[in-house]
Image (cartoon, rainbow, N blue to C red; front, top):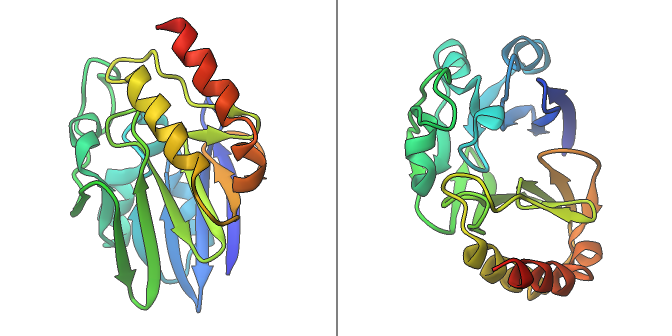
Length: 201
């Protein structure tokens, strides 16, 4: 498995291209991601979204059209993909496959596991491919996603962090912003984040 990363747009949102057996999977194509993606894929098979915020999905529609590949996105964030008060200028996109809670897919022989960790958004999810977890804006290196946005939910974030702490395995985390980390590393801080959120309620 080969993973290419490029931070996109004002918020430096990580767009990822995962290549396995000469098949390319695009994760979270954000603002102005299309040109870089097209330069770095030879056999694209899918676009995946961790959640629906504009800086992660901005180039969805353009790439769907130009690459002719399906878009997988969390069902609970469908309303964010096609525009909302949160970002009125977002080019609208529509998922070909709406991921309902936690689901595993086999896309051309590649196993892709979505796990639902709501809080940052209603549909916020991680995406696991082999030994990599793409965490979107749920978990970062020494940090977590904000839970004070429209459609965010602090109690959902608490529940998601507790669920994350119970994962019985380790993988490299590729977050939506910033540097990589690991599941085991970030599990050390979940109690702190839960306490921090609880104090804010």
